[in-house]
Length: 359
Image (cartoon, rainbow, N blue to C red; front, side, top):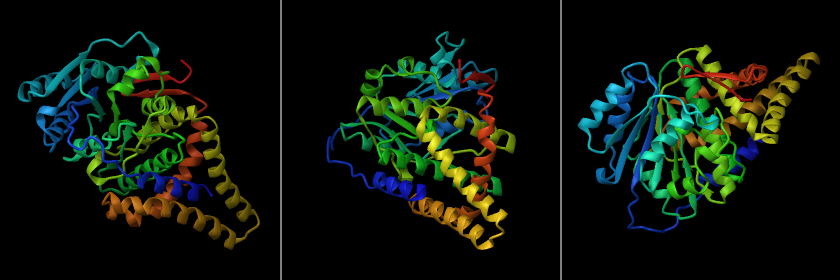
């Protein structure tokens, strides 16, 4: 049932057409990149953006050095000398306002310094498609659209990398299904864009309750404002990022997502219960020693998730991952058992900073 709901919702969202509004209008764009200790990645990120097909006079990068203790600040200062449309910003101390700690504070700092009509956000460890700006901005021709999330793809060739790559496509598609059903479930902040007038209207991050998943908090605020969200599934709007390097880092990432997902309330409960139902079915089948039941439960789960993921892989040109869908689904099921107990401790360590859900 969950798979069917998600399949229909994501299909509805992918089927949205862009109305022919403002065909000759070019939006000015501000791209915000928070960077904390990213000396090995930030230059590649910037150069990928500078390779964009969008008019260089219409977009500007704002790279926010968020209290880095490596060479990140030095590198972005040098890049700002090379590129006229890059502004290097430096945060020297954390904000005293609790909802502007960490990444939300860095994003807001960059947004305050910018003036583009469309605000686009990505991360320092990301490489954007050269058509990223033009493809995403095109969706804002619809004056009712306030926020445009899009897909992030995972690079990497190891088995663990490919399982993560399948998972990110799966999670994005589930999130897009929520938008299709007008029920915000999530998005990813490394590929997220908002109309400036909408950001200002909702009061931006200073007016949004702090969350370790600031992207979900912004999504919910835009939904509440009445503006439309268009979850874009298009290869040209994709961003590539790196997988987590080891299982410990992977678990930490998923704990952060799960802690932020608590704000989904009943939706989070329903998702957990539907996952638990699969495991209950497996346990009952094992106790009753009914191999056919076991196979039926596993087959239903695998086919359901396969149907959700496969069409999106085609659109995003990720055919290399077809054979990894089945092992990835098994991995997802295992993680659905591992992550919930981690929520007993709501502390999150991210980028060398500690946050607490209750603070």
